[in-house]
Image (cartoon, rainbow, N blue to C red):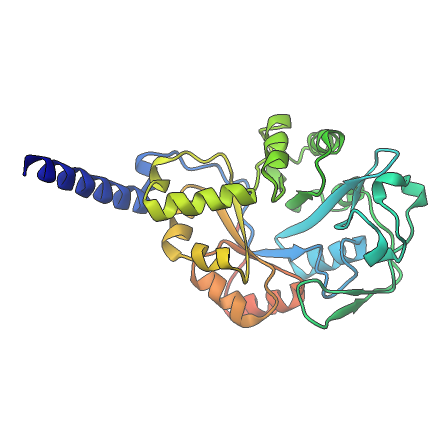
Length: 297
């Protein structure tokens, strides 16, 4: 009888404490410093309105009023950091060659027409800008725009060069980086812990376990940004208002990607997502304007 009472009181105390800290995490954790807040994020610069990851796409997104540019990085044979999603150029350039096997001068231009990965049966036709840009080109052109960098390959030199470039351009407070693979995120954090990192996929799964067991409020988190793909099984488990509110209260921004229609925009914002990543920056901006969602400062 005494043992049962002890177990019951212990479990009750745990549940109540967990619920309290879930609601008020500042009782245990210091809120992370937020150098910027992004509600409107342009995926690959807005792959539905301009050729993905081109300077034209980035300029258009910034002109529309995006809060953040999302892009991907690879390293050429002559160790230039370039902005490209694919390691192989077949899909975007029609050339079966890897970026890592070519110098920057040898890289071919983009095709005139590219499929939009996250929009079925949708293609984007580009203008004159079909060049694969250097990361430093983006930093030069948009010194005050937050940039979300996906380190696409496990390459120590690439990670080091991106870090050095971020420091050189004084962008540690305007950059977030990472990858879905945990070993890449760990290397990024080890290389430069001053640049905020994203949750990797294994860490997202761990986050799920912590949330549903009630342990999350007790556990420190080094990451400052959570990106949730939608739709997916993981998304259905993660799309919880209580989770979003808890992470936001701890200074962790929650982005949902890649959303391209108003119904999904609304669902994400209604659940408390910090921001939405889209292939159509104009469409998202018009939705936000109609619904009185002013840019966060």
